[in-house]
Image 1 (tube, rainbow, N blue to C red):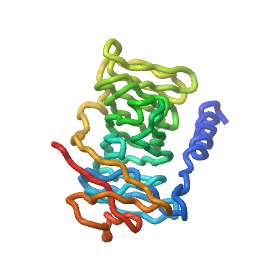
Image 2 (cartoon, rainbow, N blue to C red):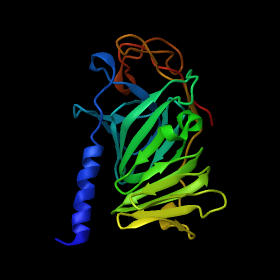
Image 3 (cartoon, rainbow, N blue to C red):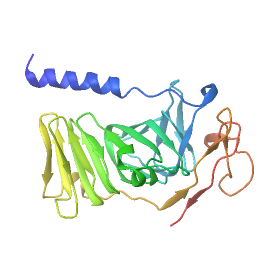
Length: 260
């Protein structure tokens, strides 16, 4: 067995173990809402830990431990309760691994944001968790970990190669053999693979010829009562949301406003 194959197998095993979705953390095993869908072009699906698959639409709820997927002709944008915005490319698989947000936190941390990109890519504008403490924000890929310092950036992973584009702030790429942060005074693009450390790229990679659309969106956090019930005010007012993809566990959902 050659060294490249051995390395690839080792990386895959480590990646699959570390990417195992967390079980629902709410009391009583109820799913924990962490965000909502802003728009969908094509198909966006979410697989839950019990293997149930939901087809999502605008305003659908995103839950902790969801595995989100787009097909080869689809794109979608979601918003988290800390107002992180994310638009997925076609053929993307993304895991909501660890997330919690406390808007009233008085210390240096407002929560935790840890996600796994298995394939494909996205553009994101980071929210309040990363703004308050960048160390609480992390995107894992099979070949590198992404961190931020108040950032608008894109990443794309395919065939063992990871590309990153900086639009604002300072996204950082850390692999097994090095790290690199992009800033206003460094190249706007970076690349890494299992055999190469993060490297600045001066020419725009072809995968970033089209910049993914992000619609400005604001969302209040989901409040939680004893037993994991989500409460708040549904989009457009009213009382408990009880039907279709907008269903929330025996309670109301928070406000949701597309601001463009």
